[in-house]
Image 1: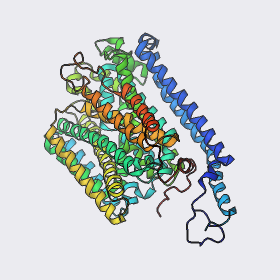
Image 2: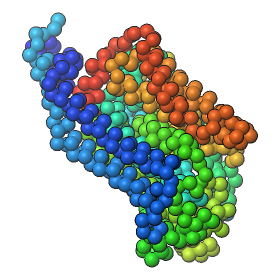
Image 3: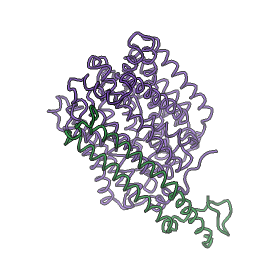
Length: 122
Length: 517
């Protein structure tokens, strides 16, 4: 996992310095940017579904409007919920590939660097 | 007894037994048994997870509901897809990074392990066992309806197959049975959809017109309200399906079977795509059944319209007593049977995880167990739980009200598991007391309110003290509140590990359980 600092026997696994990693700039960036995305995506997707549900429950007439022959507003709205969920998924995958994965790796390594530079613990 | 269908079922059991044999050669350690050696790929896991949700209850149940009442029946499937978004964004990667085999691993990570594990495992065990009995009753009824085999033998055959998969094949077998079934289910769904579209001149708009024409309410069938369900009831259903599905133990357990968090994330995305596609298709299949079978088909489709999809297959293949009709119906029926087999196996496996890994190995024996002991107890507990479930099912009988069982399982998952899991991963101030009290309150409030609801309380909807079918609008907020209050008022303590360590592990993957070579 992490390489032991000088003075510590090589076969003894070294516990990463969790506090050091947690206070590093990369980690904070990782956590805050990911949280920002998750909150936004959930607000959008669940919010859109809440509108769908609200209309189904309290304004069924709106959902019952016929757009073209048998096709209702409700059916289009329902389909759009699937589409929104799909868009959020793609966005998350892309953002993860582009930035979160890199930040994760950097945060993991920031732990290693901290351990290697420290005085060997007895 | 219909020969085609019996043969189709037999072929299915044979195939799944082969998968089990193959898997059993590769299963020896606990990591193999509960996590398939963490070697499952993103696509494979995506199909397996999707398979867990595309059960007979959802495939037959959702299409049946839409067949009977139209648009209102589509709310639950739409909600279920959002559950996967919750899983993808909140749980998939963090679970893989922070746990070993079970939800309790993650929840108890930086709290005092014994009480939290005991509470979480008990709640999970309850959820899974209830779901299991519901599925077994459903299996008995379905097999009886489709083949003429009596309820008891049908349940025993299903139960025996399920026990063989789980005891000998572990997670690897159940994963591949799920994947096989998910692929078959997608094929069946697409086949039905293509058949329906062919019958309406390849124009989906024609489908709506014909479906409406075949229903007493005519155009009202295509708009909300045909089911007569009250707004609050619709909301309670949506809450149960979104929040409850996102916290089902046997689904979350699958995120431990992949090599790393990145694969967990991609598998969550696959699962969303597959279930999304499938649940979108249920609307076409449901409307198609209405258009082609009409009101005359309602009686044959049975309660909840459960047999609408197989009957539709029969119709599309050429009608009753034709070769094409028999074959297509046999195929769809076999697929429905496969879904039950796959889901019950997964449920028993996650139950054994709660019983053997959480309760026995960690709470009772405090982690002082060898690999071999744990694997042996895992198999034994799977056998015991499966056997118990079969016996309870036989005692309950084919007329048992399974709707409330599924509702109870989802509600407990939504009110007890979900709040605790979210808070454990995200809130520094969450304590052991908060977890224990939160889960207990979530569990008790769900069970109590369901007992008071029209689903259980005798006398119909007017007489029941609690007016809704699902307790979720009250029990979910109560669960969160209890977690918060318990944390604020209870003992301020921590386990050995800190919240900081949990967040670092969960976010970066440092120190995560490695893939097994």
